[in-house]
Image 1: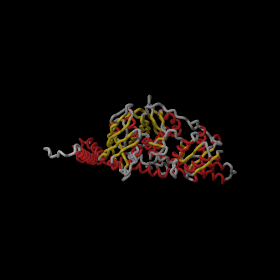
Image 2: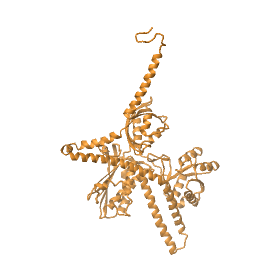
Image 3: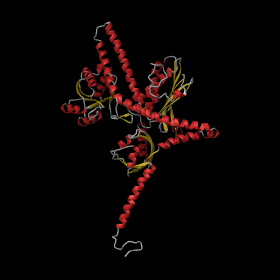
Image 4: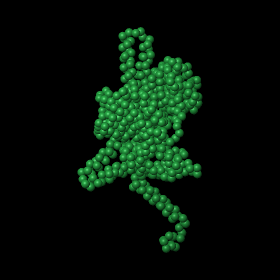
Length: 573
């Protein structure tokens, strides 16, 4: 007998409900897939303690990923390098504050087509009973087109009154906004391209420079043994000219790495007032009597967190540029101040800059100034207004790269005939002052000798030969290996080794960092000193040298090698 709905009395109870549940589940899954497709969004789930990430198929297509290993670090590596520090700090701040929601915007570089795309992330954070983050669940949406539309809309609203009066002004403003957006994209692509090119050649080039500089220095140490003669004098002059050229090549490579934001920074909490005061005496001697140097240092200046050597180089670079812009003399002012970059200001900047508190260091001159066309190019590598042979065009680009790598901002103001002001903004540091250990002292080669055993690991045969010969000249017992695997075999057969001196980037499946981790785990008393011409993120992450890492960058001189080796051996650790 059938009931009014047409169902048989003999049907098994629950069968229809089960089939209906399966149908509804499939319909819900189809609806979710269609919603993802229509909204151009992908679903993201991060298990924080395990560092594991689950991504929906649409998310993988959005990022241009054909495969994904489920690791959080792999997802983070998809974020455009310039945005990674900002996003990491934003996530950490949200966790510390116990925030329920976490929203962010950043760029990704898709591996499929190399395109830069803007992503908007909207997430919810789940915590355990002790307020520790457990899961982050949310969606990512491609908002590249909306970003471009916002730039054009902002330009439209800013000139609304003039557009009502004049149709031509509307077209000009829209065109200008489009140019700014395109220029920002071109600048980001240019930085990425230069970074890839520089990283590709820096390792081999710095290896060659180490050998060249080391060979010239070795010649210099032997010259004193030659009898005085015109020929000996010519050898000295030739050696000095070659060494000068090699040092210029070293500076050039360093500046390229700075611009591409691949130099290993060692940031610390620092007082910009003390730094400026400390270099003023040097600047007064360098600038000459025709340039009057004045400092305006703010009282109660906040501390910032940056690499002091690179900040000092940036200020000196700007001061020398200012001197060159005042050939007949003038006034140079270095000023410090506490500043706040508000939402309105950072909204007008093409590059991503966080609003908040910053320490400003400004360098102002009364020189010739620059026109608008020159201002648009001043940070480009190899662009210079100086005569041929008077500049490399990398001074300002080096400053720009260092500041951006430090999560800061640099702004330049100039008018023809009125002078120039360059303002560096570095984020305020709210933590306590760092107690920096002075590992290296002031040594000379005579005091840097030793009798310990050093294992040198370097895949470049010529560079390995130069390094081992230099260390033997200093009295050390030296063992050598061309790969990480060979080094492990030597260590297994000879435990009486005091220091592992290893290159970072090496072929064969074991890089210097992996070798050091392996050896120090098995031989805890073994000390390690790294050397590299290009880190490739093995010991440098987010632009900063990893904690506890001791590094001598290539190219290094004989004296630098001697003092750093001696200091590392003498360090208590």
